[in-house]
Image 1 (cartoon, rainbow, N blue to C red):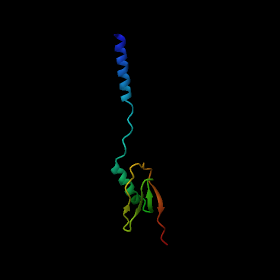
Image 2 (cartoon, one colour; image 1 turned 90 degrees about the vertical axis):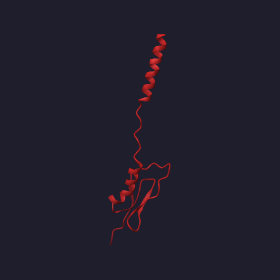
Image 3 (cartoon, rainbow, N blue to C red; image 1 turned 180 degrees about the vertical axis):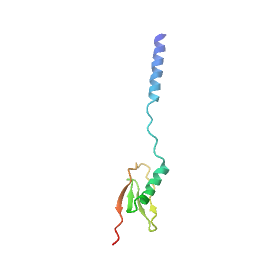
Image 4 (spheres, rainbow, N blue to C red; image 1 turned 30 degrees about the horizontal axis):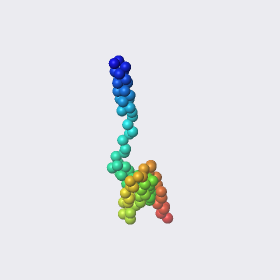
Length: 89
């Protein structure tokens, strides 16, 4: 009887340890990610086209950012400038 009780306590301890494993950090809020890709052009006015590896944004004739929707399987990377504005002569 004592062996069965010990085995049950050990099994319960193992189950608790497995359930207490670290949970991966929550994904970034999609709205915050959207704001960052759209707002990048405001932070760097010399950049005419920027990308996060999933979307390539550029300015429309009014200067507003134009960015397509993200694909379902794409994992965005840090945003970088892909093309700079030509300097005025």
